[in-house]
Image (cartoon, rainbow, N blue to C red):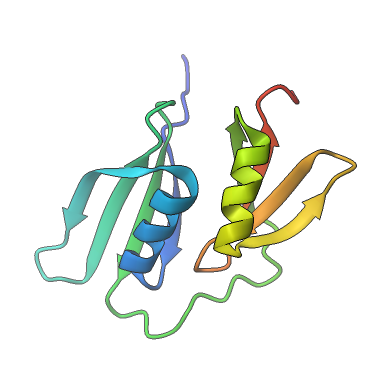
Length: 124
């Protein structure tokens, strides 16, 4: 028996804003969309074009406020082949929320407050 991770889900408050962020910050694009017949939810799957792992963004019509992420002890990680260019892009976007130069990594916030770790390709 073999298991293979295929996607992670993040619930989002503003789907259009989130789609733009992931396109601008990580060059991710929509590959599939599920629209509930009653309009109660939309699920969008994004890919980066480099891996088979997908990011699933779920928008719920009845959510009337941004999500409370509590202590936000959760994050997704992205490896990048040009760390300096990625850092510059994210700095220009104003989304870097934490840097750890000693470890050679940094984190960005998405529009919903989720943390995303940026790791240089050759780090590990």
